[in-house]
Amino acid sequence: MSVAQDLAKLRQLSNVVNGPLRLVLVEVLELTPLVIDWINVNTSGSAVCRYQANNIRKYEVRYQFGNLGNLVHELTHVGINESYGLDFINYPNWSALNVPERSLDAIGRCLNEAERQTKQMNHAMNDNKINILTRIKAWSDAATELTPEQKYEISNKLVYGMMNPQKESDTVLNQVLVWLFEWGFPMIGHHSKKPVVNALYEELSAVVKNAYLERQKGKIQHLMREII
Image 1 (cartoon, rainbow, N blue to C red):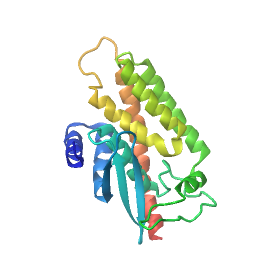
Image 2 (image 1 turned 180 degrees about the vertical axis):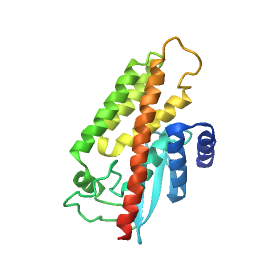
Image 3 (image 1 turned 90 degrees about the vertical axis):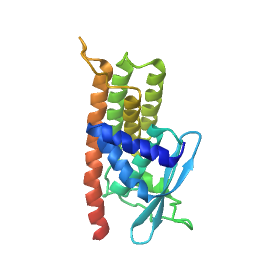
Image 4 (image 1 turned 120 degrees about the vertical axis):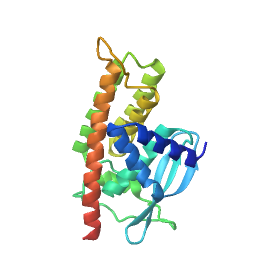
């Protein structure tokens, strides 16, 4: 599997889905020209920004080739940084105080990103993100239509987001939404009782859309701040 094949699959998928999933797929696909280095990894992944002059940002993206959910997760990191410009923090907090200047290496990677993130995160926003992730996990836990393995994967990903809400909340929500679609959900057809997994899909879609709209709003505000 190659990057080109994975991106082609995302484009195909974006043409057949609708709703918040389509919004996210279109969003991340538009970001791919900013990626200058795609790196295959066996587990996990990452997005690293290379800061350049004149507010230009390019990215290294590490992901598991062939894993579309993982790819969307890492590209969501890119989208977040482009929207807020806060070292991958998952929400706007431009009033943060005592944020140190970026220290960059020879190719523009931030050496003090963790310190800057600590200054730029907001505890109330973190709690809000955790509450959202907890609510989605409750729906997943209750969805009898999911296999134990699927529940385990979703739970692990959402708990990871709860542990790092300032930088992993939007990413894991988008990833789980991709997973659900890949697994064949929501269930279609007539049902005497609404499948719980369909309620999960709807709840997840709603929070994914809200986060997407927040990023779009943040992108405009971030651009204005760069111009001023």
